[in-house]
Length: 245
Picture 1: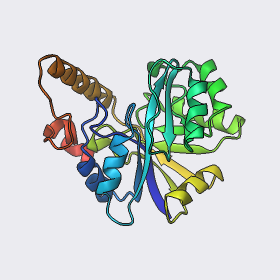
Picture 2 (picture 1 turned 30 degrees about the horizontal axis):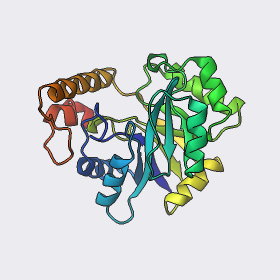
Picture 3 (picture 1 turned 90 degrees about the vertical axis):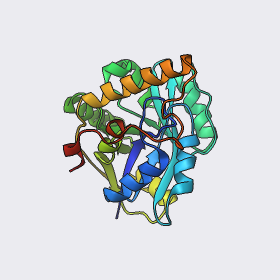
């Protein structure tokens, strides 16, 4: 059996503080068998993590794409999907043409502007529904996502949505698979078990502050730990010490 966090961000996301190398090391330390790296608007982070992964560690390439009505996770692709103000149903079609598995993430997390009716319409077309996201503000929103998946007979996934090391591995799936394609097969055949716990609300605040700092840094001609080759700020990387236990 393998244990995988299927929604993780690296420093290739403007609001994340996990360098690819640190991501791999932290995932191994926490007993994960692999991760799906889904940076905002680019697959580059997942490819960087894949290059740094040791033999046996499963890195699922992917991306989180922003659309006119929220986000979509696209797993198992190594090609870029055009981001921006695009109709989500069009994005789903493009992703499937690239061979991707399309997941509807956090469909009832209103903070992320995914209206329930839009979420239900999208859920009919996507391949799977993310039924546990550790960054949801309440457990009730994850429970609603689970009910939606059951009503539509959709496969399920789960992920921490980690942007910092202390969040990594807070949600995961357990599956019987020996490689990345085996994970995909397990998802689609509904042979995964979902587990997880919520992250503290301040994780979102940390992302907002980091994104703001990087934006201001760009205006000033600076680069604030944006590239994975640069050192990260310890607190932003690890969070409070007790969260690592």
